[in-house]
Amino acid sequence: MIDESEKFLDGLRQVMEARNLKDAPLSEAAGLHQSFVRDLKRGKAASPKLSSAIRLAQALHMTVEEIMSWSEGQPDGTPTIAIAGKVGAGAQVPVFDPYEKGDGPQIECPPGLSPHGIVAVEIEGDSMEPAYSSGDLLFYTRNGHDTVLSDDIGHRCVCEDEDGMGWVKQIKPGDEPGLFHLISLNPGAHNMWNVRLKWAARVRLHWPAELAKKI
Image 1: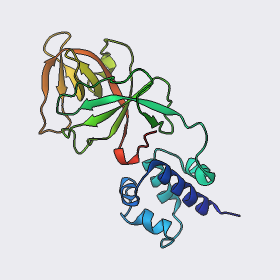
Image 2 (image 1 turned 180 degrees about the vertical axis):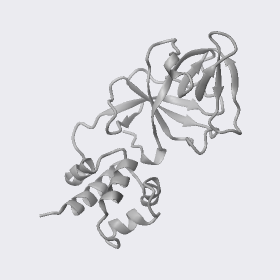
Image 3 (image 1 turned 90 degrees about the horizontal axis):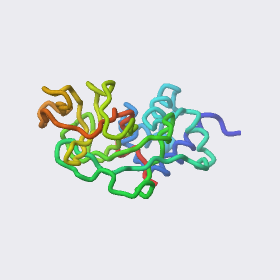
């Protein structure tokens, strides 16, 4: 009978293969030594302690039990989320919604996040390093068209300005009603003042590029 540690390791191999993940980036994302996953898979390390298994699971946005369930292969019916396009961190990126609804690339839905009403965008640019990197994915919910909710003020948001450019910025009130200051997360990057927005939506989840699986 396969014990739980072997089942976890088998499931981890399956998840990593399905997502095309490398050993070192996953180890580092989990806050473990760079060679931890490699040594674990090669049998050079002892079975992972529960704390290490939990760290790996959290880095994958999964639970330990969900990883173990993959020991017999990828579960059927894995939900997906559409990628709406790219969004700029520092440079102008006018590529919101470049696909017909439902026809764009799909990303595997992170465990614990409902796929209903959720959209993903891909970061382009480096003005938010080290918080977000180019190629990372952000998940958000559109609360309505042509709307900036008061609850989103002060938070990191995906937003679209009146010229159709997509951004990821912290939103603050502008100098006049209907205008907003867009603050970059990187102190050395360009801030935008008194911008009129079509809409904004708070970032619900950030997923590093190396942990995401495009379908």
